[in-house]
Length: 366
Image (cartoon, rainbow, N blue to C red; front, side, top):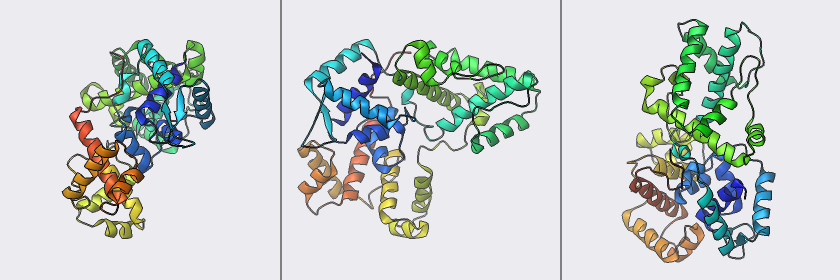
């Protein structure tokens, strides 16, 4: 059975009918909405956020339709787009779990906002150095994204060594890293590299060549990339050149939430931040929820007094759900939707801290 069903059923089980199928699609694509970001924490599926960033909606819908036809998922609460696994679906998931697992590198999400550009930089540096040492100054670059090409141009300009030596040093840094990670991840990463007289393969092409599900290949590729970013942060002295390609900021906050945080830290109330930034109060509330999830030590007491927090936590225990409407109906006017979202966010953050940042997904051993 195909790996994509394993991934789909696992996420269906985690959401368990409390979110729509679209929520799973947006999670895998890495949609930077407050709802998707919060869901990734609430349902402990953070490693899968942005894990398949080029997922086609038609492919996803076909996967969902096939799972329905197999009797693995069924709609809940008379909803057309909210599904939970059936007993047959749980048996299928258990079967998948005996045969495989998810790559553990997915859990290194601390650089998730910059991982796409960083991967393009790595590919472009390798390609450019390969072409230059073969005396080719004109070639078709793997990307024309301006932020990436400018970063690589500065990198090449500011390194004071000849191109052959630079290529050798970059090779040694990459080789040192690749020798430490699972072979299947290393092979997939290397196979995507382009150079003189050689075009890198796409993940789809690799999937066909390796006869492995493209969903699995994409997760393996993403896992390798996240491992690399994690190693660079952990041991920068071992990667002096590759570290130059990283962004200086490693915050997992979205850029706009980071700007809101700076104003809040200056003591501005939320409504004043909204006015100053010309944003709606609801948008600032979205930012505050994201900050509560991602910034340890951020105090939410001014937005969520302890008595209200306790009421919400009691309601969550009673309803056994994270659906805002259900919780709100039980509490009536004693808590706002914003306060419920904050309480859920803080609860999810505490659970993550209790797990010491370790992934809750079933992963392969290294």
